Length: 159
Image (cartoon, rainbow, N blue to C red; front, top):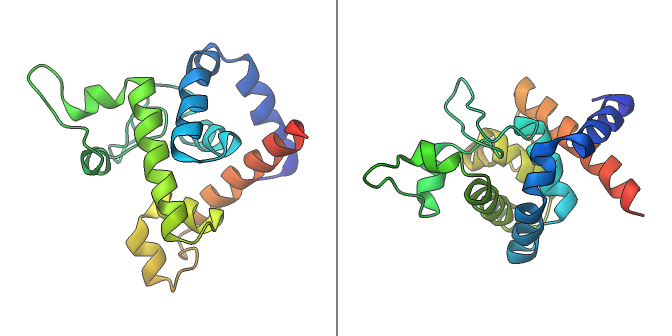
């Protein structure tokens, strides 16, 4: 992602009512799971542009675009009147579950943010099969570049 696009993304984030609504959840998830607040913001901006009702064509749901199977690993279960998909549209639940998953990936890949992001996008197995490198998937490579560009702009602003 060109530097200018990352700056534009960050400028747009600040004005979004959905971002303002999610700030508390992002902050509490950052503290609870030890993931940098700006990294969570960069993931959410890239994944859903802060649209809590977003659903991808592959079935990923909510702000952090979680797959229902991934959410189930973290205890998000269907119950009468509430499917996993409907639960994942809850911004607080989605952010906390996604951040927990991201924290686990960061630990799994020794704190290497780019590998954790690649695994968030393509799955841990894809990163492992690629020899603990970013897999040779155009979508994953573009995703990592985009999240990292937004993350760097957010970090630079915080200084």
